[in-house]
Amino acid sequence: MGPVHNLRTAIEMKGEELPGWFLHSVYIASYQIDPEKETQDAVEKLFNRYRGTYSKESNSLEFRAGSVSGYAKGLSEKGSQVFLLAVGSAETERKALDSIPSYEPYDELVEDMKEALPENSDSTYSLRLAYSTDEKEAGALLRCYVRNTGRTLKSAGFVRGSILATLGGPRDLSSPMASRELMTVSIGDGLGKGADAVWTLCFEICCLAIYTGQMNRLHSQRELMFDQTDAAERSTQLWINEILAKMRRPIEEIQPKDLEEILKETTIQFSRLSTMASSMRRDYVKAQGLLRGMRALLKKWNERPMDDSITNSSAEMDDLENLMTPFRDFTERTEALMTQLSTVLDSVRTYLGIQQQKMSIMEQTSSKEQLVRLVNLQEILHKLEVLIVAVYLTEMARIVFETLLHESANLATTAFIPVALLTSVFISRILHKKH
Amino acid sequence: MEAVDLSLTIPGDWFVNPKVLSEFYWKYKDHPIEEIRKVSFQQGLALGRSLKEQLGIKGDGIEGIAAVLKAVLKDEPTAKVMDVKEGRVLLRNSGFCPLMTACLSMNLPWTWLCSALGWPFFHGLGSAVNPKVNLAMIKRREKGDPYCDHIFEIGQGKLIIP
Image (spheres, rainbow over the protein chains, first blue to last red):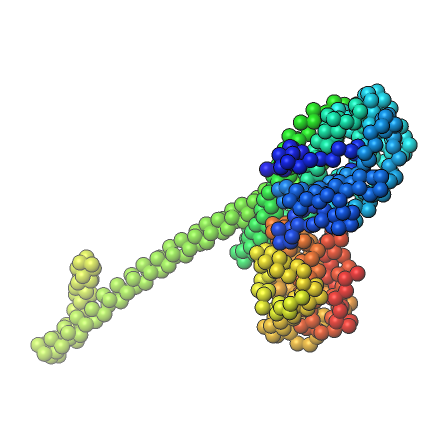
């Protein structure tokens, strides 16, 4: 969910009145609110410095510093805080129209007010304003300003009855997304509806600052990861190649211990990549939410292009989309590595399966041999059993013969041996049949 | 700043446990970094001493340091002892390491974790074998290098982060 798009309406609904003087220079800065820390009291600091009319409830201040009027407002929205510093003059004479005013006194006051703001803003917008009677004159004023300041026109278009231009060129030292310089030429006399439209535009730029600020923060938190993507991907790819090379060895050379080690390392890598891909996807989804919010805000501008320039809306959207690209790229690249690791895991599983099958065949072969050995042994035992029984029978017969036949006992015993053997075989068969 | 016994708050598996890293960071992120480094160093030292005993490492040579590092990193596919020669051990960390993963998943600052916890811990491991070992972090991914090179050399027992 993005910030409220119409901060202006929200302010008016609270019964707050906006200054009636001509705006000439505006500075907007957005910050992330740390839930553990108290929000900044920059507006109160400004009140202590400049006095004027301060409302703690609405967190706003209006004051005068010599001939220059100042206004400051702090707004909190969806985890962000944005400060609007505006300066201008009550000058309502015609001389303020169709000319580029001297911004020096206004810029000086803005610079002075900025000292009260917290450091490390996520995004800033500096806006200068001029007033013109018609569209043609407004275009001429803008071109004149761009030429005189040695800047370039990055984007320009007609928004809310004004020409809004984003400046590029030599002064644009910081990241193009983090810091913007804008020029607005309001068309009309700058009073009534015209002044109203300028304020509305300022508050819409506050919303824009929240979106770009949140996106900048998200991007800067991940920048190191993006920078490391190539190196980490290369290193992981090398590792995968090494594993696949190991797996290409003849199956007999791969020991179960090696497979276990490969499986362990691959599982670690796979789970890490999975965590990283899903975390980056989470951030990408967040970024998409910001993009949707910004698109809805800029759609309300219904911006009309000026000459051949790209519109501010398109330029802002392009910049935001460019910041989103690395999130998607990172996710896709880690997922591609995960696919390869899945192949490695499948290979390891296949090898383990083959080895298991081999072991099972070996076990089967081994048990068959064991069975043959057992059968042979049993046969030997049977024969031994027959012999033992035959010996016993013969011995018993000898005892009988010695008692009955005396001298021919040995002959009779010898003659009895085949009978004993046959009898033993017969007994053995009967006994084994029963079993 | 209140005095806290940090040693009680880092479990032994901190380097592979994102939850622990996250809790630790949010609790001590505003604490002086030197104190956290000392705690992490002590933890590495304790683990290193226990491994030295288990592995039966004698003497204070560079080979002993390499053996301790290998034992700690035996299941870690992204960190390898690359070189042990001429009085130095080169441990290289590349790819998607555990700290990188924890930082992304728990939204933690990578540089802080490596600098406050990671490098002092490894210095502690090496110091268990030889208290005079220096650990120089010449190449570091947090400053844009493609990998982190941990170079252990006998010196004055310093952690060098140029």
